[in-house]
Length: 362
Image 1: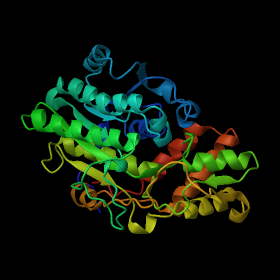
Image 2: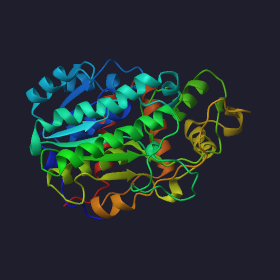
Image 3: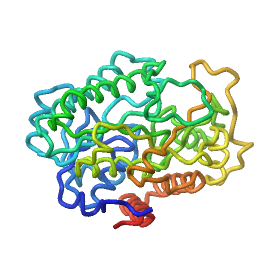
Image 4: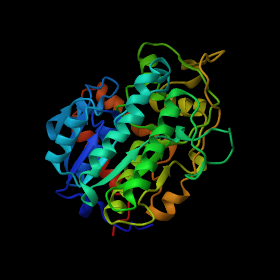
């Protein structure tokens, strides 16, 4: 399917702000945007130890960035006014479920109020800026349905992380209804499933936990091995965000104020155990020798979460290009290259170029 707009044309020489640019997805987004010719700016609270991409690819040397709390509104407004971005991607936030359980107040403040801060600051720029709010597939009320959640389904997260993402969506919708309809604000939200890619080093994430355990000659312990999740390649998800931004820039009425899911086809919705089994093979290990399961999970987790991405396919002409096997192979190759001290900027840029070549551009 041919895209309606060419990303190279849309982003060349444009000023783009990425909040949370030193996170896992944020770092890859910076690399992708720079490949498209954008001038990238970053904003984060502090250095991110759960991500290997930012430092190993010297992302901070290639962009301009600031370090302050996104809820420090005067600093935020001054920074955005100075940059005058054509696009804003809001990824900054607390992204870990177990950490949210330990720090609920901080999670709500960052994820919900932080979204309000970025939208309020974006409003100052009017329709010259397109703002993409990144939340999560966890924002939906999970009924353990065997079918994929659609963008119109009920928002109602049960744990602090999920609830904070539901709240961020409500904030986004209220800003669009109040200011977007009159043209003061151009915004949309994106909800993606579990993202896989090289460089993720966060705790309580599947691939990093596997690598840490296996590098220590230990079995990885799976707390919910039969849980089914919508696994996504990181570049697939980021391409979705980029397409939303471009359609906003063109004032597409099918995108303004809308939300979009980004998930795999049903064939890509694997159980946790199947993912780890495949990743072990790509890591060069025998799965039965390196995997254990937890007898009782101390934390509540849903068994099934699926996403419907039909709206994204129909409106944006987006589709997932990377299947689970290739996704896991790429993640394994990235981490092995990192362990062997390869030039990770060149390695990662080659991955981005190869990915962009998968798309039929107008």
